[in-house]
Length: 67
Ligand SMILES: [Zn+2]
Image: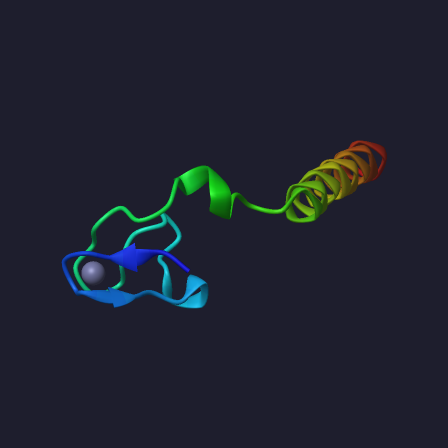
């Protein structure tokens, strides 16, 4: 848990903002890299994009064949 000098208290990891700053005074307490998006989340995004791309491709070919 990082210590916040401005608030004079320990800040719980769960209370830190996405950027690693204190939720009360906005002081940078930890490196933003420490709270990176998990790779599983990125993988899910990539899979969703590929899926949506495939579905739109299917939709386009369907339209082409039914006009
Ligand atoms: Zn603070």
